Amino acid sequence: MAAGHEVVAVTRRPGSLPARPGLTPAVADATDPQAVDAAVEGTDAVLSALGARFSKQPITLYSQSATAITEAMAHHGVRRLLVISSSIADPGWRPTGAHFFNHVLDPLVNRRLGRTLHADMGRMEGIVRRTALDWTLVRPSGLFEHPAVTDYRTAPSSADGVFTARSDLAASMLRELEERRHVRTAMGVITTAVKPNIAKLIWNEGVKKK
Image (tube, rainbow, N blue to C red; front, top):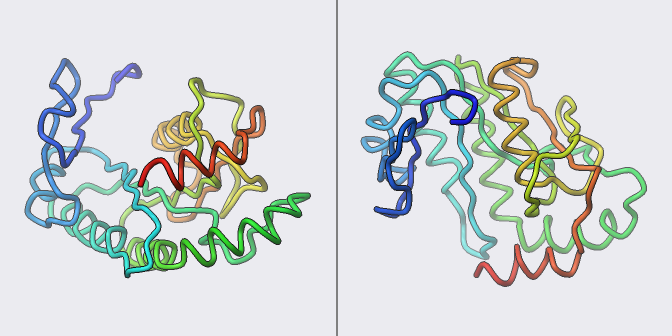
């Protein structure tokens, strides 16, 4: 909105996003084709920032929402799509110099606890790739909170780093929306200027949010 965009923001919670100049809230479930179709109508681009918690049960949020979004976009002739995925989706992603992460945290947290989540992210990527849309798969690493945008880095497929601030992830998506450097491919995003406390990150992202 600060950059002059008019935004339709989809939320499941009525009243969580009060309308104001430049912002139109749309209460919808992102897996509901009719609700998504109504939200997409009249827009120029779709940015998906959906997320799910780790679960032992099968997760379908990513793949179901991707189907609803891409079908709605095709129906209304909207071509530009940016979807948040994960660096984990790149089979060759191994951050340089991150021995503890590569050999302990990644196998335990991402490949085991997050197995069903990342499996559905993979299905989402497949659905998006099979469309004729101008899509970008945005792949951050471990997400954490930071109050300001930093000198983040982007790279094709995935970026060489362990962490990504949500502020940098958002900024990278808006920049890619305008610059179109990674159309019909994946874009990695990492934060290098600041690093989160590992214990605090695990608590905030994996425990506190449950």
